[in-house]
Image 1 (cartoon, rainbow, N blue to C red):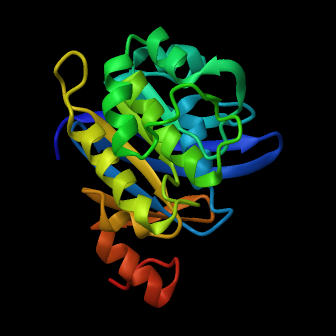
Image 2 (image 1 turned 30 degrees about the vertical axis):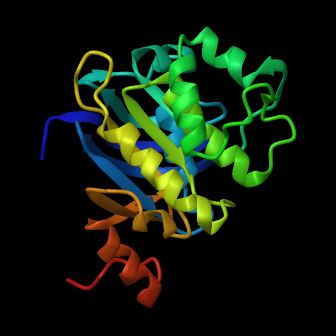
Length: 240
């Protein structure tokens, strides 16, 4: 295992009075991509929301560390500044701001030209953010957005969901490029991806998989082997 980049230590999360996650622990090393597998309602998206500091998810126990420092008390914008970035399932629309203007504000116009073409979004520069995008276009845009933001740690919430088969390979290749490219300071990036269908595993070079069930991580192991087990036996821990 390489040095820890992101670490969850016995993290429990609630929304109001409802417990969502219980004692979740995992460590993603620099240069690693981890996959989180689980049924609907198991708390997968809640893990990413807790890491990013999104309301109404509240960490009620444990700690979240990034580069060895606790980020539990930081706001969303502060977590983005220290290097976290997230591809959302349902991002908001932003009328009046085009994709090209967004890229320019981030000094990322060159990256837009290259990566938009790779994700078949080359004609999107003059479109307002997410306005009128199809479900698959939204997912590809969210991956492209991370290229523009260039965070050091990448969170992907079901990047292949709703994407047609011909574009899943392009999304997977883009994820690989993001994870393997060095951060702005030259250090290695890391990533945590949620998948429900498992299709992205055919295209993403992942180092570790985790099964989340009932708000807990019940098993960790090689991602493709875990998914094959899930296909045969469901979301239960493999027999010892």
